Length: 277
Image (cartoon, rainbow, N blue to C red; front, top):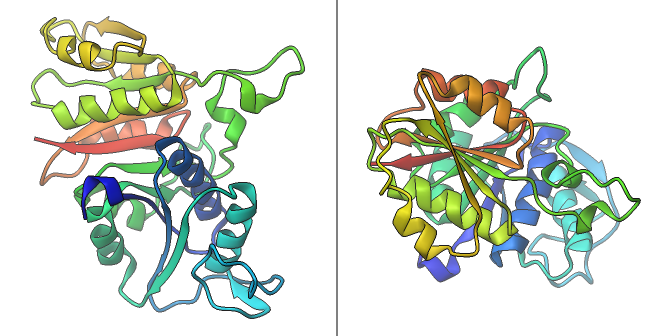
């Protein structure tokens, strides 16, 4: 699939966390001006729920009927919340992990849900989400259950609508030992579509030239570097509590390392796992 026909794809399994992830994915698709693809994989049906007929809704590729699975219900709800968005709903009997990995090949970003909010219990992530994030060819964003649109924006204090508030920073954790153009490019592009600042957390040993070409490519993005001595994990966790998205990398052909897995489980915002060389 060519770059101009990529999608934002989200896995739907009927859980509350997957529906919250779908809502995040719809906002991301709108920001990037891409179609949204909803995918339910596996032989088990998504959780059913009664909704109205959609025979007269032309923008959603789902069959008519009164009793709809969560996949169809999500498509309907998202079509009303985002009427200009191109939404495609699909089912496949292929098991979840291989189906999602195949879908990721044709996606700009693959979005999956977690099973709980952050806090003392951490960020529970299921085996499917971890398996896909460890092997996908494209960025995978893990969205915690309960994530709201206002959570990615600066809190409002003057009574103005939350949707008009600026976006919180995108935080990038950067390993100086990796050739990470895909990782850096994803973080810069994500900040740019939000008109959000980009905060880069990295060790002191990162060459000053690493970010220079990206600053030139994205001149409208405000970049703040945070150099740390030692393990950057605690600084990244701290930054994630005031971020709209945390971006971390993993080597292509490998799963996330111990530090990245800890960040995935304990971050205070959605986490993008981006494969790179």
